[in-house]
Each structure stands twice: as C-alpha cells, then as structure tokens.
Image (cartoon, rainbow, N blue to C red; front, side, top):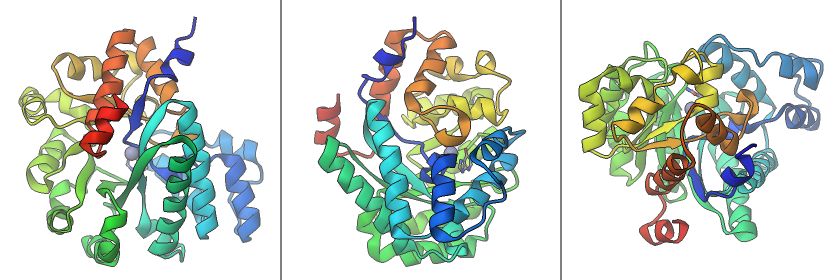
Length: 325
Ligand code: HPA
Ligand code: ZN
C-alpha cells in the first residue's frame, strides 16, 4: 500500500525548488501561443519525450530553452500559482522559490516583471491556504561574476522583497570561490545565502560554499558524503542539505536510489531535507520525492523527522516555525 496519502499530510517546507522547473509542458505550450514564441518541439508529447537526461547540462539545455516562453508578469503569476496549488496539495506549508533573473533578462524580461508576478502568486497562496514563503534570487554560475554583481545591485533596492540569494546552473568548473564578493555583498544587504554545491561537483565545492560564501544551507550537497571531515563540519555547524531524490536519479548524479548517500548523511546526523528541484522535469512533486525516500528504506518516523528538519532549515520566522511544527 502506498504511503503517499499520508506523506501528503505531513506539514513540510519546500526549500529547493526552481520555479522555472515547475513549467509543465501544457503550460509551456499555452504560454508559447499566448506570447507568440516558438518552442523547438511540435507537441506536448514530443517535449515530454525529451525529458531523458544524461547529466545536469543536458537538462539545463532543455530547461533554458523552455524558459523563453516566460515573458510577462502574468506568466510568472500563472507559473507560481500552478506550483503553489500543487505544493499545497502535497502538504507544503512554506515554500522558498528559486528564480534565475539573468536568464530572464537575456530573454528581454526585466527583474521587476519576474519578481512582481511571483510575489503576486505567493500573496495569493498566503490568502488562499495560509501558506508562507518567499523568493531566493539565484545567480547562474556559468555567467560572468560581473553579471551576478550587476544583477544583485539591480535587486538591492528591493532586498526587502527577497529572502535571499542562491547559486545554480552548471557546477563543475565554476567553484563557489568565484562568487565570494557577490555573496559578501548579499550578506551586507541582509539577505540569506544558499548555494548549489556537491551535486556533480566535488566535496571541496561544498566546503568552499560554507567557508567562503557563508551559506546557511547547501543545495544538493550529496557528494559531501565522500568526505568524513566535511560531514562533521555540516553536523557541527548545523548546515542543512536540501536533497532532491528524483533529480539526483534523473540527472544520474547517483546510480539509483539504492546508491543514494542519503542514508549515510542522515545516520551521521546531517540535517537533511527532501525537495523536488524541478518537478515538471524529474517526474514528481515533493510528496513523491518523500515516497522515493521511503521506497529506499527510510521509515515513516524518519520521514517525519525530515519534514520537521525542513521547517527548522527554512528562513521562516521563529514564531512561524513554531506554528508549522
Ligand atoms: N542544479 C543546478 N542548476 C539548476 C538545477 C540543479 O539541480 N535546477 C535548475 N537549475
Ligand atoms: Zn536545484
């Protein structure tokens, strides 16, 4: 019998979610038509058939191609609304949404258009379901550091509309150390800081993100399991990992759930959380990711612990965390 209905009722926070990665093929085609933008696919089925990835880069190529259909504030409000409705059904009570403004800027979409649409969706979700959350502006690490800095300065007057900043896109060859100045400026603006590290990149990147970027959480971080001293550091400093099981399997970061280092990390006392990353592309929203963790041998009690970890690891206020537990 499936544990899914029960997993959907666990109060949880989703902390590793690229809003652009929630763009389902049906909405992608609807927005392409609405905006007169061409997708390099003729049908929803043909697009879905392309969801067969070898690694992170093969996914990113498709993900960035599909992002070109997102143009107006309404598009971002619709995208956010569709995700938050789906997340609410999965028991998500607090959602922190990543977005990639440099990619949208390259498509001719200003930062304010993206933020205003997503903030409207978040406000509607709070009014409708009492959901809390916010936005995390991600720098794409395969674009120049100067572009990241310029994006942060453009966002600075609206720092109050952001929870924090993150770092995503192609990882290998783009170490966190490149972005030390950017993250220092984000800290000075009072923003929280997270970074993708140790998804495909080595454990040394996770250490750099902690030591040089001052991040409060690591996104993915699964390769930290290869370095015992690094695991100790994450435990001692209580730095959570936002793990994304379906993503790791679909992008071949692991050979399968049976080979996933989650068990090692959890048993060593790392604050691990379960998240969906880009659920439209990887075959399931967050409750389905919890189900995959259960199928890999974790007990319901352990899943309850991970859901509680997600609330503790969130950037919600302390009173809000108490309410969510
Ligand atoms: N890794 C890096 N960049 C990303 C990802 C990811 O899993 N998803 C969307 N952008
Ligand atoms: Zn991610």
